[in-house]
Picture: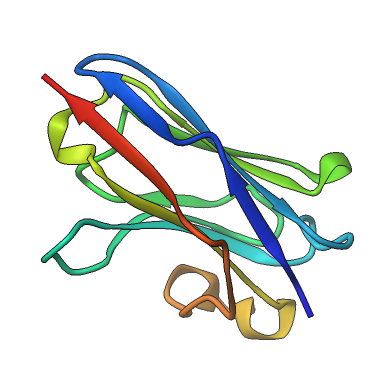
Amino acid sequence: QVRLVQSGGGSVQVGGSLRLSCVASGDIVGRYCWAWFRQAPGKEREEVVRVSQDGDSRIYGDSVKGRFTVSKDDAKNTLYLQMNNLKPDDTSMYYCGATGAWACRSGRWSTVTPEYWGQGTQVTVSS
């Protein structure tokens, strides 16, 4: 069983920055494909970014392009989301997700619903 533990959320003013972390149990970061999602109350879940297994391919949601950056540290089994120039619309609960290699192949890493989820971390941006 894969366990994902998130940290790094909080409150920040408009234009500020936060970095979210998602630590995976076991040596899986380099073998799974990844994603960050977010969901605000009363809104649908929104894809923030998708990451291929090898980390070379990333797809960002239009609303975060140029402001958010995903990275991963295989040695630390950790996925990061660096969020800069935050806006009130970024206020949401953020979730990391991971999917096993077999389900990520043939380009499915960009669309597959994650098998495993972090517990979520709240990001609040105030003006």
